[in-house]
Image (cartoon, rainbow, N blue to C red):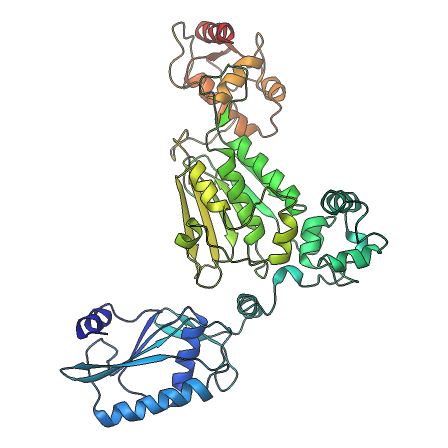
Length: 491
C-alpha cells in the first residue's frame, strides 16, 4: 500500500470496513475486532491512527510488539483462527500497521470467551438473538432453515393429492421409492425426519402451513398513491397456503391491480399487463424461495401508483450484493426447498431469475438492506394512473366528470376501461357492472374502471346532479358508443 492510498483510506474515516486504533495492548480486544470483521465481510484495522483520522505513527519497537500481539490474537484468541495480512506503511509521523482481515469462510468466528461479534457501523456488537445466530450458522452451512423440523407436525398434515401429483410427475409411479411408507418417502426426499415435517415439506405440501408458521404468508396491499404511509387503499389480501398457492394468489393480486394495455389488439381482449408477466413471476418466485425463513416475518407485496414493490425478509446472504445477482450470481439459502420448488413453481435456478426479469423489464431496482434485514425488488410502472392527491373514494363517484360528451373519446382508454365498455348494456348500476366484470373489490373497480371511464367521456351518470343517489346508473355516452362501434369493426 502506498502512502497516498493510506491517506485516502484514512480520509474516508471509520466505517464497517475500516477501524482506527492509536495503539493496542490487549490480545482479547484485538481478537474481538478480528472476529467482527471475519463475520461481517472482512475489513481493515489501522494501528497508529487516531480516532479522528490523524496519523500518530509507531516507532520500530511498537511495530515489533504489535505484530507479535496481532499474531497471537489471530491464532490463539479467535476460534477458528483467522489469517490476516499485515503491511507496514512508512509515513512522516512514523509507521502505520495496516491489517486486512478477509471475509471468513468458517463463520461464525468467536473470541476467547465464546462470544460472537459482528460489525455495526464503525463499531462492533455482540450477537445474542437466536434468529441472528441461526442466520450465521446458515451462512456457514451448519444449518438451513428449510430442513428444521416443525414441532407438532406429522405425515397426516401433508396434502396427499398435491404431494402424490408432484411425486408421480417427477419420479414416476414405478420408481426406486415404490413400496416405501409415506414417512420413509418424505424422509428420503429431505422433507421430514420420519416423524415430523420440516419447513420445506410444510411450505410445499402442507395443509394450512400457517397453522404452524403464521408469519410465512404474503401480505398484499394496493395503494392509490405513491406513499407507504397512505391510510387509503384500493385492495388488500393476506395470501396464505403453500408456496404454490401463495405464488398464484400474489400473482392474481398483481394482475388485478395493474393496468392491461391493448397494444393495438381488439377491444374485447384482455390486453397485456403493463409490466411483463415474466418479470413479475421471477421477482415473486425469488421472494418466496430465497427469503430468510429464520426471520418470522411475511413477504410484503405493495402495488403503488408508480411501482410494484416486493419485500422479502432477510438481506442477501453472506457477501452477495445486488450487483452480483444482477449478473446471475447466486447462493442457495434454502437448498432443499429450492430443489423441490424448481419442479413446482416457475423457477429455473442457476441465478438466472433476476437477469431474466431485467431483460424483460429493465426498470427494476434491487435494494439490499442489511440493517433492516430485508431485500426489496421494485418494478417501476410505465406511467402513473393515480396521484398522491387522488381524493378518497366515498360513496358513488363524485360529479366532477358529468354531462354528456358527444365528440370523440378523449384521453387514454386503458384495458380496464375497454372491458367495462364491453359489458355495459343500456343503463346499469355500479354493482351490476362490477359483477359483470367479475371483480370482488369495490374500491379497485371504482379507481381502475369506473373513474377512468367517466374521465375520458366514454360513460355518463343517469342522474348527474345526484352522484350519490341509490338509483344512480351508468350508460355509454354518444362518444363511448362510437368508440365501441369502431373497436368492433376493427375486430
